[in-house]
Image (cartoon, rainbow, N blue to C red; front, side, top):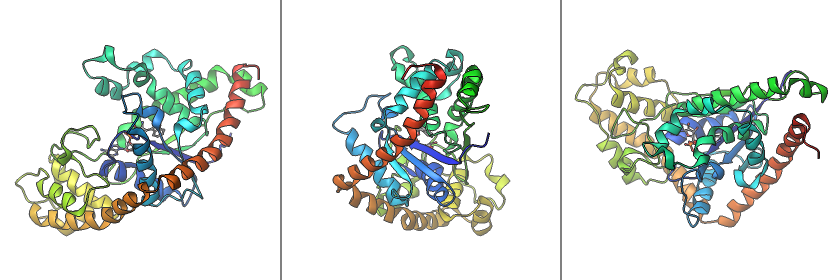
Length: 343
Ligand code: TYM
């Protein structure tokens, strides 16, 4: 059966949005608006799998919303909302808790990384987080999911859950007139030259919200001075830049900065190296500062302006949630019939 093409993705309101979120995900969210109906979600239910200060969470939720809008997502043509306003996410996640297998979740590397050594003390929510993520996508029967490289394994799990649901309930799906499959296999869209942006301090670590050193990342709200300082201090090696992409392979810091430049400029790494290959890092960094400030400065300013208008942002989220709820309720009603719940 052909499914209607639809894009879904989410971003957690759990701290500073950074260049990794922007280049790995949000830039692609913006581009996909031209071709698809898109649903972009501020995933607050996911955020609380790790403790969030209730006095801070609303601001963080509005800041991610502001980033979506400032980067160019149109909340009228598409849907922007926060997850907790659409109860069907949690409802479908429960059903998926009963579809997914413990063995599948035990393989999730992000749980292992986030729970660390103190696994016994991690929240149960953190463990079943990928089931909620599958519910986010499949409650809209979304077909395409733009994400950074770090979400690939979670997307594979979503596909496994969709498939197992379709298999387990095949007879009921058929009996209710949904053909051979109720859920699509959502396709990850992991695109561009910066699908995994690394820390500016250590090319072997992912750029992340939770890294203690602010010098490891460029935040979307950083001003021009902060961006310039962080890029100037970014770790590099003493060699000149290579002229060919192959020369970046053993040099993670150089690879990262070239990838960032390419993504910001809308070029490939090969194009960037054609221009800067053979030159010193100092010159390349000057060009990178100029480019980053030109691209990110206006976004940061617009975000700061928007978060000062919480009434407007709350209105965008409420409107998006109303529209999302209609779609989610339709899926959930069908799922209840398929599973055999009386309604
Ligand atoms: P989150 O909030 O950690 O990150 C949001 C998006 O940013 C991408 N990203 C990166 N991309 C490149 N380099 C980096 N260093 C980097 N850091 C983060 C992430 O891959 C992501 O696309 N579980 C998700 C949120 C989520 C979701 C969903 C996504 C919940 N439900 C359903 C897609 C579909 C997460 O924690 O993203």
